[in-house]
Figure 1 (cartoon, one colour):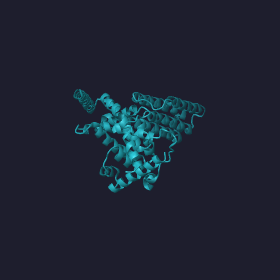
Figure 2 (figure 1 turned 30 degrees about the vertical axis):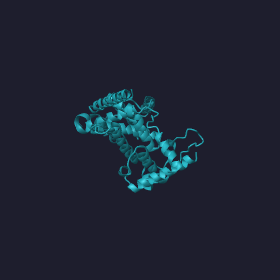
Figure 3 (figure 1 turned 180 degrees about the vertical axis):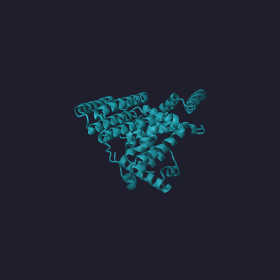
Figure 4 (figure 1 turned 90 degrees about the vertical axis):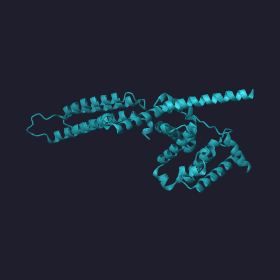
Length: 172
Length: 189
């Protein structure tokens, strides 16, 4: 055996068996286990525990359908209807419904820590965007493009809330 | 006197083993606090293995998390016939290797770039603190996997061939290559 190989062998015996990670990994592990258990429960009891994902999907569907109906109503509103709803009125209904869906989602995720600290600020910025669109709708009550923009902002809020409450290892 | 000291050491060892068996049994029953104790006791060794296999800190942290998440479900498979740390190391190697496979992109998989490339990371060989680990992390991926599993973790080439999906001869060749590179780098110190 050459000297260099001997040196390598000797160095190998001194190699540390342990190395500690620089950040705390336990929180992510705990969340990962919880997610895994939730998934297993959902697979075992699809009716009872599948409520959350279904309700979330339903909330998106409701928002989308509402938006589509609004658009349809505005573009194809029968002439005989004396008082078709304006985009602004429908935006108010959409806002009320979105607020309720958002509250439900936040309540369902309240025990899961958020992965970023500024997510509420981002949510507030999207609130600001929604308010600006609603203000524009007040000036132009039949503008369906504004209504679609509002719907899009609400969808962004829902996906933001869901995303920041997913464990990091799931986002890879 | 020496006999007395030996029996004290044996008693401590037996006590520690029993304490760990109790913690494992509790974790197998779903006790997360017990599982956290197991994590605290073994994270250092698991992370060290993940780091040496992945060759990169962030990926090693993610792989360590993946190991402990999957381990929670696999705990019931541990029957106490081998040492827990031995079993855990085997689970860690398997999960980390499959984690690395999943993380490697299509391009890397198709062209097998990593197989022959020495890592670009620069090592300051003028520093007094250059360790074998620094050199190991610089090895090409396959040579590193084989070297870590064989020289550090004590796997046989047959086991490595099975785990890494390669021929036994390839495992031996990669080990030889790793040794050559390491001795060359260490000789230049």
